[in-house]
Every structure is written in C-alpha cells, then in structure tokens.
Image (cartoon, rainbow, N blue to C red):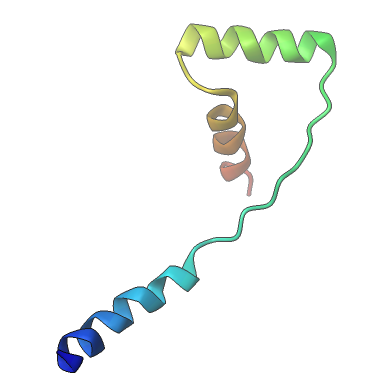
Length: 59
C-alpha cells in the first residue's frame, strides 16, 4: 500500500507548477467597449479570450 502511494506522490507535486494568475482592470472608452462587444458577438468569442490572445501575440 505504501508503494502505491509513493508512486502517486510525484503526480501530486506537479500541481505546484501551475501558472499564477494575475487580475488586471482595463479601462475602456465607451467606443472601445462597444467595439469589443460587437467583435465578440460577431465571432462568438468571450472578451477575455480575445484580450488574452492579443496579449499572447505581443513580442
């Protein structure tokens, strides 16, 4: 029984390798917010996904 637990333990250790999340607040003008909402409606995507993809594309 202890042998099985020892084999599973390294799998539990990988959970500490998760990326830390950081919350940010983004202030948009009314026009910017409307453009983002319109784009999200047209593409069926969430605003967070659109913004995250744009950030990931930065050099």
